[in-house]
Amino acid sequence: MKLNRSDIYADITRRLKEKLSQGTLPWRKSWEIGLPRNFQSKRIYNGLNFINLALNDYPSPYYLTFLQTKERGGFVRKGETGSWVVYWDVKEIPGASDEESRRVPFIRRSIVFNLSQTSLLTNLFVFTL
Image: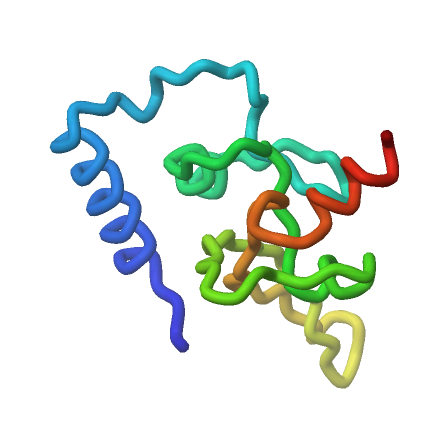
């Protein structure tokens, strides 16, 4: 699926409007749960990723990809829907000589799942008891 900026903005706008029409101010939350962060790196998401994940109502602030869940011996529960996050970087494309190399920006979308959507949340509680 081709990813473009207008689709990302349209999706965020649609989700914000839905929350507002329900009478919810998504930026006013009880932050007892914490800010959305990556489960593996513990890094807090920022920018559009933060806004997109903060619109979700899950009991855990942690998000991970399907493969990160699988690597930890868990699984995503059947029927769960992930949330997208975008990653961008600049790649160095080598040319025939060092002077001909180009820097090309790229963007990639990934789907992440909240920890509560996986079997890992249950496993974490079992192992810590």
